[in-house]
Amino acid sequence: MLSLPTEIMVSKSKVPVFAIMLLAMIFVVGLFVVGYDQGHIFSVVLGEQAYEDLYIHELTHDMRHAAGFPCH
Image 1 (cartoon, helix red, strand yellow):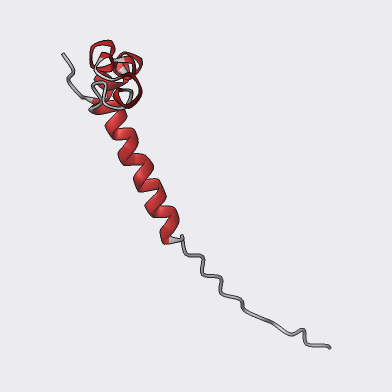
Image 2: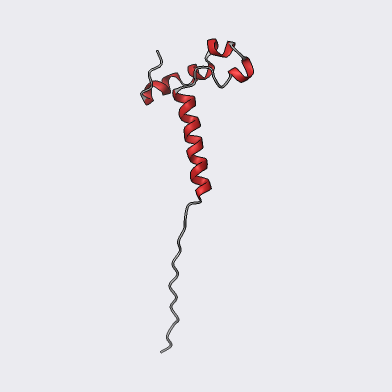
């Protein structure tokens, strides 16, 4: 009988810290956009008019309420 060589390989996969930080940043920006934006993002382009039009607020209005953010 021939004996077959056995080899045990241990694979350790670590999630890169960069990936975790990137996902955390995306989460924080998304949380701001859905929960707290009152025209701040578009005010860079539209100026004071963005605070009256509230484009992102209206776009994410129902999502805000579903997430538990009061907005009016």
